[in-house]
Structure formats: structure tokens, C-alpha cells
Length: 392
Image (cartoon, rainbow, N blue to C red; front, side, top):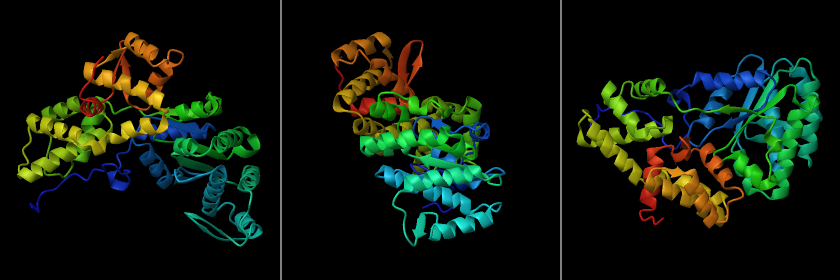
């Protein structure tokens, strides 16, 4: 082993925090702008673009007069558990405020609260109706003129809505909307909602409409620009043994095409691994090509894209969508007419473009000149490798 070799510290499959997090000021500023306008926010972005990292950063770096709390709520199994979690998050924010310290101490005593921890609340007598308690607490917070603003960051909400029973899912959607729209509850408390599957798809399956999301301000995560992507490579490889010339950066990005840190990290990490194994820090365009091929063959990186479609769609819906993606992978693109022809085959002519829209929102495909192609060569190569035989 070469002890002098310095690899890039890039998160692969984990949330980027601390010095592994590449700050995108424009996105953070846009979220804060919407919150300060009085809006709750929906992070509308495909998978693996850094939504969770952004929320974690915001929690660690709040602006003045704001208390903010992040939770991954994927483990929640019922509406009651959801309301309990929101109640706990509110209390955690309140425990950190100095402006209403005396008020909060009296509140804690009145509710027989023994201890407030980041992962939960210890009560002498645990309330049985957390929705009622949360409603009352929201009214108290918003009615206190000295109270700081509170932002609750809820990650993986779509997964919760999909996995619990329909009655509870509808209850959560209606309640969240009620909290956001009632002035006596929403003036000082805002929400940022995110997840790694399309929330619009989930809500539509629950309620056949998306009206319960219409009041949310959408913050869209665009991929890095070409200049930003070059800067990202410089940042990610700073101090590493391997360095990238302008020519090598251009070739690497040409292989990736869709510039999100996750895809760039995959390729840089594999290049580093192969170069370190060969004990040769001098890389070439051929080195980049070889690393790309190796990444594509590692199903662990991309299986989740396919599994999520299988898990969240009824079999007939998945078969239709998978047919679209197989065609796109083997033919490089699919036209609207070809999509319609497949919709006829799968009896999806009434709503076939809704599936296409969701594939766009979730980061699978992109429209170009009235045709659709994979947003990333990585995904295209994976789908083709995963489905090597395709008969139209």
C-alpha cells in the first residue's frame, strides 16, 4: 500500500456533511428567500442531487431569528407517530430559543415533560392525542409576539405517505396543509418537505390530485453548470494525489453529462481506486473511460433507481415505464409517438404523459427537441446492461 497516496474524500451513497459538503449558495439562498416571504417549501429535485445535505447544512447554519430542526422521518408508521414527531421537533426548536425561555419553562412544567432529547421527549404522563397537542402548541407559538421563527425540515415524507395506510396518508396531507394555511398556526412556523421519490406521484396515487401541495413554494435543484462542474472537480480533488488538467476535466464531464456531485463522485472515486491500485497517479482519457465502464458494471450504484420504480408502482405501471426506459437505453431516445404506441399496448393512453412527467421530475429522463433521452449516460448504460436483449 502506498502510504503517501492521498485519495479524495468523497461521499458515495452517504449524506455529504461538514467538509464533504459542497455548498451551493444559490439553492440555500432561494430556500431562505421563500421562507422569509412566509412560504413553506417543497424541494423539487431528482434523487441523489443533495437535498438532504442542503437541509442538514441549513440546520447547522440557521439565519438570525430562526430556529431550525431536521429529521429523516422515513421510519414513521402512522399518522399518530407523525404528529408526535412534529410535536417533538417543535419542542426541540423551542428549547433552544432564549427570547421566550421563561414561557417555555412554564410550558414544559404544564405538560409534565421530564426531558427533551433530540430523538424524543420524556413525559411523566405521555399525551394520547398528539394532533390535538400539536395544534394547541402551534397556536401558542404563533400567538407569542416575542417568539422566533421555526422551520421544520422533513426528509423522506413521500416514503411515509406511500408506506402507511391511505387513511393516515390523507390525514397527514390535509393536516400539513391546514397548518400551513391557518394564520394562527403558520405565521411563525414553516416546513421544508423533501424525499427521494416524487411526492407528486405519491400524492396523486393517494388522492388522484395534487391540490394539497399547491401552496408550497418549489425550489428546483438544477444540475451544476459547466463552470460549476469544473470548479467542483477542483474542490473535490484538492490535495489529492491525482490531479486533473482542463482536458481531463472536460473528458470526465463529457462522460457524465448530467452534472450532479453524486455522479461526478462515482467516477472520480473509481479513477482514484484504479490509479492507486496501479500505483500510477498519471491518468489519461483512457483511464476515465475504463473507470466509467467499471462504475456501470457495479449494479449497487444504480439498482436503487429501478427498485424504487418497482416498489412504488403497481406491476402494470412499472412494466409500461420499464418498457419506455429499455427502449430509450437501446435506441438512445424515444419519441412522443413511440411513447404513445407503447401506451396503446399497455392500455395507458389516458394518462401516459403523466408517467413521462414523473420520470422527468425524478431524474430519469429529459426532453430534448420533442424526444426523451436518459438524463445520465450512467443510467442509460445501466438500463441497457440490466436489459441486454430488447425486441421492439
